[in-house]
Amino acid sequence: MKHVQKFLVAALAFAIVGCGGTGGGSGHPTSTVLNSSPRVECIVAVQLTNVMHPNEWTQQQLEDPTNMAVKADLFDQTVFGVQDPTNIEVGEQMIFQLVNYTTNASGVTTRNIIWSGTSFVNSDSNSTYGVLAANTGQFTAGNNPTNGPQFVTCSYNGASYSTEYDIKIRQVRLLGTVLDGFTTLPTLAGTQVQFYNSSNTLVDSVTVQFDGSIRASVPSNTTSFTVVGDTLPSTYYRLFFYNTVSYDASVVSCFAPTPSNLAVGTTTMSAPILVSPRIKGEATPAATGCTDSQLIKRRS
Picture 1 (cartoon, rainbow, N blue to C red):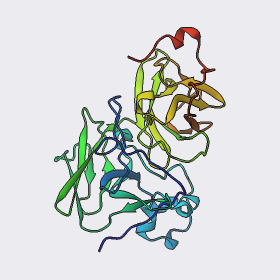
Picture 2 (cartoon, rainbow, N blue to C red; picture 1 turned 180 degrees about the horizontal axis):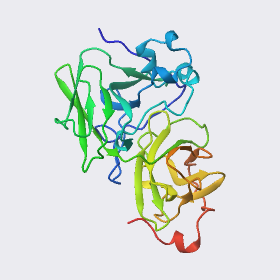
Picture 3 (tube, rainbow, N blue to C red; picture 1 turned 60 degrees about the horizontal axis):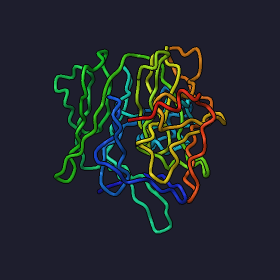
């Protein structure tokens, strides 16, 4: 029997673009599929030692990244949620899940976890980069960073579904959210956020998850970020706001600043990244956070 756990957001509309799992570790834009077809996602494994009341929760409740009651019971609430699998760090414990998304006539979207009848296989057959439990999707990253993309494949009802994963060295775990600027709802799943150092070199790319979250893994010399305009839905301006300043997402060098003095460990960005829906008949507003020289460096 197939069991589900649900995430309900009123009037939540996800863009259905592309196919496959989340990605973006290579810096190439990819998109997240949020529809009725199953897809493999990755979540942070909740450790019982981090829960204040471990006897109050079932294993399925602990494995539901939409269960805010579980999050509230954690000593460290940052160790919770959906993880872009291209940004796993050495030694971390994750869970791969087969899920789908359904939307009812009222526009309410539900995240369904497929608990039964699934089996998981790792392309890393020698467990060089981590150990994957075939029946549960539990994954413990090893001490070796990957030197190329790996894949977790889930078999279900005679079909296979895969997602890329990558293991990085322990760096700065940078947490944030990307939300609709009018409603503050998480309607931008699949959008890419890129991070750069002071030399304007790309150091990481992360995919926005179904709940609007990003969990990046960046080096401590990271100084700035941008939203990749090409991955935004066409119904949104290629413009994003961070700490009330606006930045042109169609300009490769129009960067917003990351928190300063980053160090190995977890840091949360100081504000959500907001993207505004287009208003019919109105041009894209001018960005306030870019210099004239930056604004002429258009994306190819």
